[in-house]
Image (cartoon, rainbow, N blue to C red; front, top):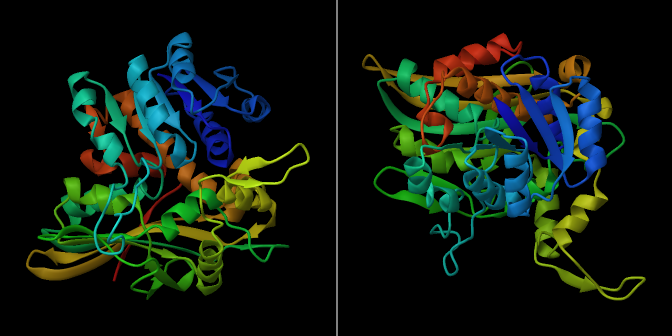
Length: 404
């Protein structure tokens, strides 16, 4: 397998460090708009299977040319969601497979944003599913940790733990702290703003997908391995759009453990218009400059990839499932916990980016060996879960299950 990895930020760099320990691929081209960043990611692994290139992720022709020049079999997208569609189209044009960790962006309903869905996450990709299937090409969408591993957990629960599922709820929480910062998100603030301030989506059988107010339906969820109780709220996330396509459940939700201070900060950004992506004109030394307010916020905050040495604690991604097995009620939480001290010691990557990065590497290995196969635009739920979970454990990062 020959891989084009687009994006050499925190997650992309963690991908290289994880993949370097595995023999399943022949070559990995690491491409970024900042060539120095791609070169640093390659130099750190000291493996001649890797090489660095410069590419603009928004330039479809350039990405297509890069895929063809290096004869790549698959494009792994480690950029933010703004670049999903140009990279998705470039992979198809080059006849390559495609894998991402976040799906194409949504647009709220123009009149009833907190009641009805507008353009949903992934709709632009699924609209092209027939073309991918006819071409015999495979696009695996939403294959990070959340979405990704959380979806694999949903598939595993349906196949092996339940006869009937009432509800699937992804629950994400952490007890991470960062020395020296009052506000330092552990993941891309651009993506965090997008998913937290957009109308959250809920799925119910018979009703389908619908939306609610941001931060709705707060609940306290007790996370395992010492993390403890964290208040979680509804946010927009891909699992709610993916799980019902392949898993039979009467309700699907996603709730994120954000904390009251984080929620209030996001609300303030929204109140001031600093969550906007459309450029505004501001004075500059050489004259007026058009800038995106959200990009300014991201530039003012520390790069999450650089926070590992200051970070302490654990992060937990997991899927809570309620239903029946053999006629009796059952409730479980399938989860994956990463301790920041472990990920920094073992890989030099902070916990959140490492946990995101390990899952697409596992998926690529399953595709390379033929354990996962197919064509079209498919979510993680479309594949057997057991091979993935077994391989994740073999990577040295076991998962857990707790009866509730």
